[in-house]
Length: 120
Image 1 (cartoon, rainbow, N blue to C red):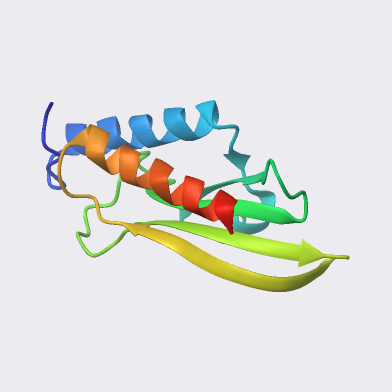
Image 2 (cartoon, rainbow, N blue to C red):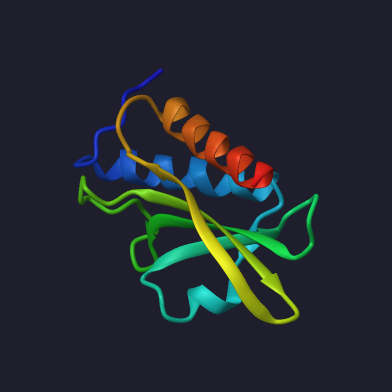
């Protein structure tokens, strides 16, 4: 498997495609609340086990280019947010995924963070 190179435009597009297709398979959709003001694609879904809990993924995929950002310190973030009676109770970050290593390893780390968010 190929190792991700953040300065390669094709690698940025491939990783963005892998991330978005994986999130789509897992039932995530564009988040209306965060997508309005964010420079990146933000996807979310209601947790399968607790309908008051929402899992949000900040993808680091630039809306203008459609590829991952070049900045190496920028990460994919997974957040779980609990809302009860339209009032936010708590929000917790379950993962900050560095975009280093092989494409599959990056996607797998994101999936592990989503599973961790489901367990909270």
